[in-house]
Image 1 (cartoon, rainbow, N blue to C red):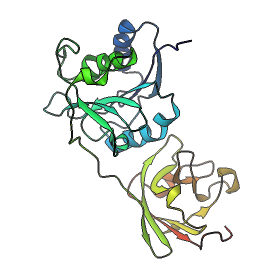
Image 2 (image 1 turned 45 degrees about the horizontal axis):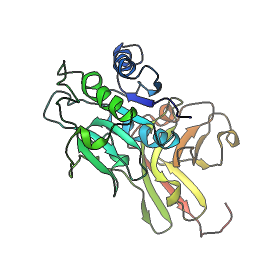
Image 3 (image 1 turned 90 degrees about the vertical axis):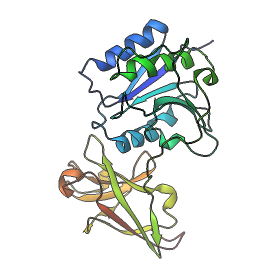
Image 4 (image 1 turned 180 degrees about the vertical axis):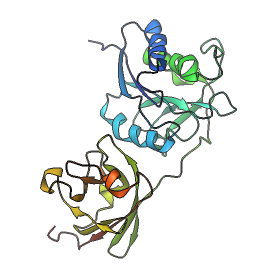
Length: 264
């Protein structure tokens, strides 16, 4: 049995703004049977890195046939381009060409520029491409339309500088990138970077005990652990690491690693 089309929405519009409803109205007018999932409409305003990290964490969990519409777009209405991306795993995304889709622009990705024409009418508003351009493009893909029909191939999409961990001897260095709704801080250190057991952790110069899960910490204790998104996170049990450390981004993080196979 063929499943109804599935479209996800990730924006900085604000859940109560009315803008998500307008995007959904366009999608449902084109695809009345569509299932629409709100990943979030609370990405911090204009925060491309936070939006990209949220997409990185959430998009891979959806069925491959889903179409992902993402809008964090401070340059809407300017000369910035609009994209359709099909990543190497076949995931399809539409959004602005400003780095928001960076996690899906790896080798093998097929990128096209959205162009207006018979398939994509010119936007009614210069300030709402989410409704007027990206929603029609997402509807086209969700009904089985070919990405090739949306526009020409693009070889130079904008990519964000993508923070990564740096290894120095037995030390792994990274930084906090964003806070989730609990105040946990997602960092640039990925689980794949942990080539040995973590023997000590520091955040902004403060010790953070490395644990397996939040419940291993004492209430109010600063912790480091591998989060569900595959990145090391900073947390405070029953509290907020962002509040405890006074920031959500740029806090230096250091992990000391033991030899592979050693005891944690």
